Image (cartoon, rainbow over all chains, first blue to last red; front, side, top):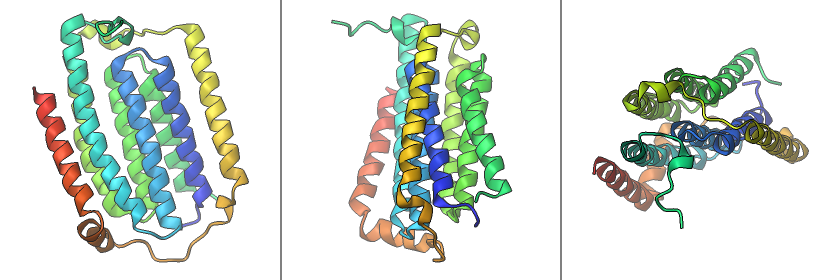
Length: 101
Length: 156
């Protein structure tokens, strides 16, 4: 493998930046979920890359945990989207105001 | 020095991530997200982690991305194409993204990460299994309970 750890880390940083942009800019609930998934995958890539170059099984193990927990988070997030869509007929987070004090 | 496969995967993954957020149609955005997740699996293969790569493909691409696609299909057709955006917010977001990328990238480049190389053999999937059963079994049980709870909660 000619790629180095820094290469994978920089790709991870790029994906993190794109995910943060999505969370900050997008008002569509589904697109915000896309951004969260991109951020989680950036972290997983970093975990596995460090696990390979500082040889340790913990990197891959934690990445597996992260993927499983992300599956649970997506299930809950999508159910929230469905419920919110039923209530507001919209997926714009600016319209979700029922908890506003 | 990155090789051609790595560069191609980087372009595909980052390009699909941008497309997932910027494409007008949510359905094409979901498919672009599948491309991003598949690209990450490709990186895992490059990092000699085939078990994690296939887990990523099975869970993320096979179930999560498909679940997102189903949810997008349940949303009204007009909302799939509706872009709700504020120009000033978009430029602020791009600025924030660049600040995060440049600052973190500078930290990584200035650190000692560039000098880390390895000739060690990759981690065997048996080692991962041994870790799960010996060190991480409480977390594994908790993760199963969390998954069961989240799916039950989502169903209700």
